[in-house]
Length: 238
Picture 1: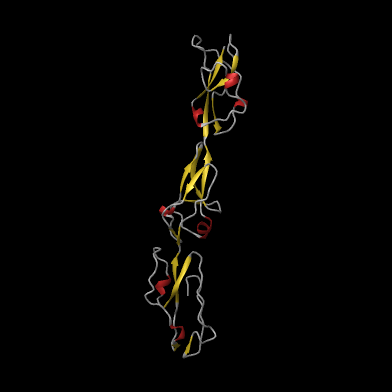
Picture 2: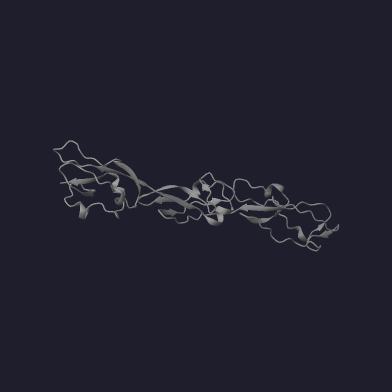
């Protein structure tokens, strides 16, 4: 008998099980568990803290002549394994050196993840896209499919600095949104404004406030924002 199924069978009095129409049963199967044998101890089939059970009352009497009712229980040991750390765009993942036990919380068997530049690690999910933490109970989905790290793209704050010449205190117009966010590694130059300043000609935007030739060296429609652009995007007037 297992915790999933109980079967009641009858054999003639003073007949052995293996000589009856029933015969010696084949080893049963159960998802997440290894069959360890048969026992006359009911507690042997109850899952505890994940440690392997000792079959203190094994049943091997398939050839014994049976003269009384007898209960026979299957002994199950939960499977122990390393959780697969699947790959994902935006970083790397590494399997834990600790093993997980089926039916128990993952605990320190949870893999580790390292986000790449421009990404943030936000957690794990199984193949059913269910969020998984160290407190999640190990089930068939985790055992068979492993876990996938979730990496999200960082938003980089871009600041448009008018870079007004030193002898002019103000006067730049046309910069209505001086600070905005752009997803890491996305192009952002195409939508930058064209500011004006009386007595000066706008040459372009640059990440270098002293750039003398921003049209050649500055930000263009194909420029990708990077982690270093969390400072200021400057422009040059002349």
